[in-house]
Length: 232
Image (cartoon, rainbow, N blue to C red; front, top):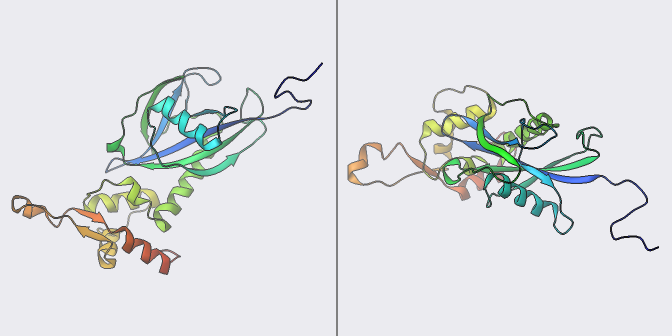
């Protein structure tokens, strides 16, 4: 009797994708979580994600699951890491590929769907208990976020197109978990020519010096010359 398609004589692990999305609301760093609507861990919070279909790549799976569970279907995602602890999933042997995304929260509306009972942003300082090994995934993602903001211009992706120096300084202090002197990061970026004053009308002249946008080319040029600790 011929074997059926995709049947094997040895056990195979399942593969899944999980999406870690950071957003900054001007004051706090946030993480997007979904409430699980099914067992295991029903009622617990987790990262948006799910199992790989046979006819898709793992990146396609990540985008599909993110869209199905949160309504976000146009996020820029990059592979974060692979998590393969033997007992990470009580359903069986599951290997997950985690993805990282940085979003401007004002540009996205979160809507729970598929098997997610709820989807919402949580302050990074107020994360509920997470399902599976998502605490480990979050720790890895925070480390990558730090590197992206410090070395890769990740702040571009978290801040609105126009922002105040105070908001920029708050973002860097939050990501780096420190309290720098007032105006340190924004002052440094102004010196480098990375911040561009936003033009405003005469009626708004009193605030013309209070809002900026990024000169991405200038920042990229600076990073290329100063690989280590670019803003220290």
